[in-house]
Image (cartoon, rainbow, N blue to C red; front, side, top):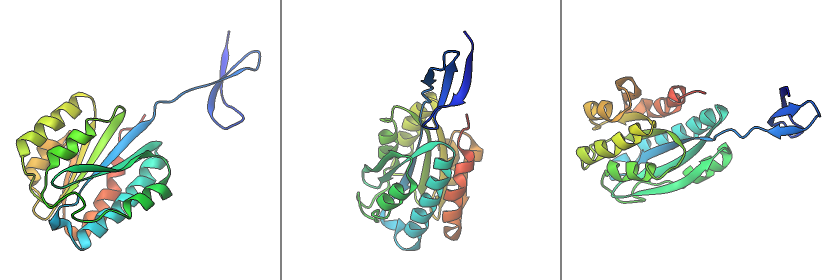
Amino acid sequence: MRKLLTLNKEGKLSLRAADGADTEIQLKQRNVLLLIDTSGSMAGAKIEYAINGAIDFAHSAIAKSYAAALAVFADRAAMVCDPIDDAAHFARKISKVRVGLVGGGTDLAAGLVLANKFRDLTAVVIVTDGQSNNNDAALRVAAKLKKLGVEIICIGTDDADSDFLEQLATRSDLAAYVSQANLRFAITNASRFLPQG
């Protein structure tokens, strides 16, 4: 029996049988996690650039059929927004992010452990301005994510270790070191590196 690929009455992708019956095609949701450093050194303009860049990024990611999630890390990591395809809701959630929310240090490994708990994670975008408390631990957790096929994109500024970020990223071209003034643009621009298809 031949089937025709079409949109059903609700505008969702479906297969239509010869008898007119529609079967909706369930597409696997792709999730991207923004992992933002909220340690003490991110105070001032940097956190504002990061927040605005994250909002821009979410708009772009959602337009590419991703659900955007947000987590923060410092002494520990915490979820701010579960994966969502509503950019306005994402913006409301991130507007509550503050420096010191989860401490003052830079435990990037804690943020990556949190990322490892996602079931359908396609990519992680890490934003940081400093040195990780434990590079080896962060690299070990990142290796687990990479083995699962998760793309890791890194954006660093100020005291971030550019060599470490290149090791952390899935590929060296997915690691960027930018000036504080270009942080918003770099986060916004990270959406172009999201896997397609």
